[in-house]
Length: 161
Picture (cartoon, rainbow, N blue to C red):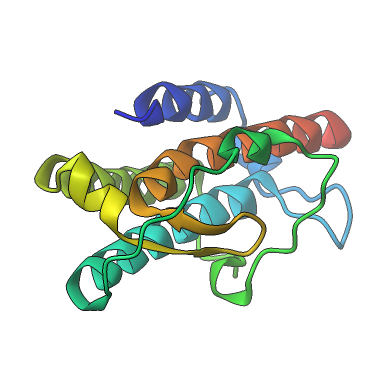
């Protein structure tokens, strides 16, 4: 649904080829390691699901026009991650990151299977770059966001090799 599983498989395929040693290496002090990027993906998906649930429970219906969220993969535009979704070094292994990502994906799938597309289209909340996005676009955004960071992980792998 929303292409999330196909995009997640690309992440899983990539990290299955990364050694534990490489996963924790940073190309420089001001960049993230692969484990930190995976933590960011976990934090971001968790944050989005929490926001969606909160908006449905406590928000007012407010639609939003479709946004070009596929542009998320364009890494030429630097975006500073909000404090709440910046990694803190919580993962010590690829397996730990993989398990956390599986938990957030289960929550995402539970949400999308238990809410109609119509419900997800009737509510919105703002994205820092795109403005107001409906909840359905937020769910789809998770996958595009992961593709952006897959490219970042590939760059990190190349830089540390």
